[in-house]
Each structure stands twice: as structure tokens, then as C-alpha cells.
Amino acid sequence: MNSMLRFEREELCSSKFNGAGPYYHLFTSEDFPLIFTKNKEYAAAISILALCTLASRGIELYAFCLMSNHLHLLLSGDEKSLQDFCALLRKYLSRLFADVNPALSKQLEEWEISTKEVTTLQQFRNTVTYIHRNPFVLYPDITPFTYPWSSGKAPFSPDTYARHNESAEYSSIRLIRALTKSRQFDNVSKRKMVDGHISIFEFCNYKFVESIFPCAREYYFAHIKKVESLSDFTYQLSEQITRPDRELAEIANELSHKRYNQPLRQITNDQLITIIRFLRDHYSATNKQLHRILGVPIEVIDKMYPLSAPPKQK
Image (cartoon, rainbow, N blue to C red; front, side):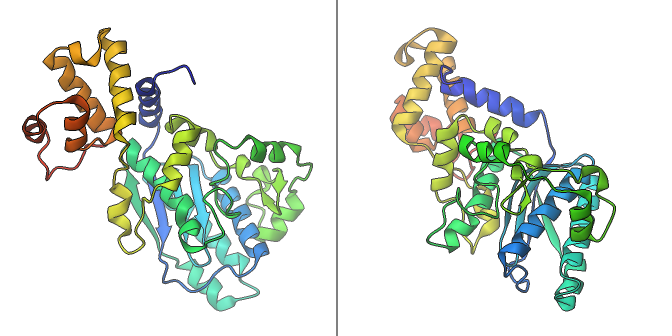
């Protein structure tokens, strides 16, 4: 992978993204009452999320984050599978609090889970990043990779995966029945346990997340860039993350040599237009960046991409 040119990696990411789906970001309101107040409640909720994911045919979970009164999930599945999954999650989270907080348990039975379709590769990346950055934005001592109740620590983390492999603790049918007060999960109950809950690597498709970022550096870079505004959530999820000019220039040069066997300055106008479209569509290059990097008159680029039109996401 390291020997691949950047645009080749990007094309592999696009192919992987287009080969699955449909994708959805599921989230709940931050106005909901406090749900999780103890570590053991968070841990139990992660195990319930794991069981619901494993037991739901057609559902793939890619990223998640549990906050004290709301959650975020990124998954794929058809509409019926999605509805069944949400119903299952409500049911068993409600049961978790039935004895200790009956009022909260009742509210969780009717918990409203909102759904936003994720239709492009860049939006998928932004959603992964947004989900993992949720606690980082709120808590100064937390990073997207250290929060214990999210999947942020799983991708590109061989040390974390090694801890999973080294764990000798497994859940049992008896343990899962006690947690869920049900026999529904008997066939998915034997799973590795880490830190008091079913391991992330048992139910979260971290490998897919790795495959839609070109490399570990890009995953890290995305997570340290601000992609959210807590007061304007929906807009920010569709927002593009722009790259530095030097990085885009390197990509343009690589593409020119790879596709046309020519330096960037010697390719034809038609070939240059192809590179403009590639940088715009795959890397969210702005009109001014394309003008600076490629030397194309800004009027030409503005005509191709009117300023009122956002970059098309792939």
C-alpha cells in the first residue's frame, strides 16, 4: 500500500465505498435525560450494542460513540434491517435500566433515533470523524483515540488489536442472559471481552473503515481537523476537508505521470481538465487552489465550477 500513488489509493477507497451500503448515520438528541452515569453502564451498553449488531441480519456497524445522554452510529443495511436493529437496541437498553431507573427505562422504549443517509465517500469519512470527535470536543483530556466508549481507537491501532487477541476472557450464555434478561442472543453470546464489555473488534467493522481512508496518516489527519460545529451539525457533516496546496500539487504531478507519462506542464488541455475534475471531486480542491496549483486562469475554473456550487463528493 505504501508504494501506491495517492490517487491510486483514493480510487481503491472509492471502489470499496461503492461496493457496499447503503450507509446511514444514526443519532439521538442531546436533549435527552442523562442515561449513563457509571462506567459499568457504558460497558453494559457497548455489549448490548454488540449483541444487537451481531444478531441483526444485514447490518454492518462501522463506527459508534456513546455519550452520557446520546449516541452516534454509522452503519449500513436496508430500511427493514435498520428498523429492526433500532427496535432491538431500544428494547435492550430499556431493559438495562428497568430495575434501577424505571422512568428512564420507559423513556428509552420510545427513544427517537434519527437517521441521515450517507451517500458519498467524503461524507462517510466526515461522519466517522465527527462520531469519534464527539467526546474530544467536550472533554479536554480526551482524544478521538482514547475515549473508552467509542470505536475511535480501533482503526490503524495494532496495539489495541493485540490487547483484544491477548484477552482470555469470553462472555458466556449465562452472562449474556443476565445482562439482557433474554435468550435471544444465545447464538452470538460467546465473544471476547475487553475492559468489561464485548470487544470492539468482535462487532465493529474497523477493517472497512481502514479501507476507506488511504492510510493511517490520513485517518489521523482527518480526526485532528475540525469537521463539526455542535450548533450546526447537519451542515458540518457535509462540509469538505481541504488539503494543503503542496499535497494537492504532489497528487496532480503523480496523476500526470501515471496516466499520461508527462510532466504536469506538458499535458494537453483535455488532460488538464481531467486532473482538475479529479482534484475537485476526490480531494475537495477549491477553485483558488486549482488556480494556484495548476496555473489555470481563475475565470476558466469558475466557469467549470460556479462558486455557488459546492465540490461534488465521491
